Image (cartoon, rainbow, N blue to C red):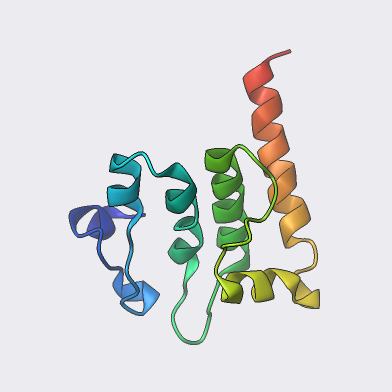
Length: 109
C-alpha cells in the first residue's frame, strides 16, 4: 500500500483520488470486501491504468485473502476487462499459479 496510504487510508493520489477502504475493512473483519481493494494498488496514472506485473501480484494477494483462485463477481469491471484483454491473456493464469504455489508452501513438503 505504501506509507502515504497507511497514514491516510481513504485515498491514494496515484489512484486518481479513488476511495481506498482496505484498512477500515480489515479492521472490521470484512475480508471479502477488503480483498476487492487490492487491484486499487496497481495504478500507474492516466497513461498506465494498470502495471501488469503489479496487477498480477495484487490479484494473487486477493486470491490468498479470499482463499480462492476464482475471480469474484463483484470485482471492478475495469479490472475484469483488463484481465480479459487478449494482450493480458496469461495474467490470471500466472496469478493463480502464484496463489497455488503459496498454498503448497503452507502445506509443507
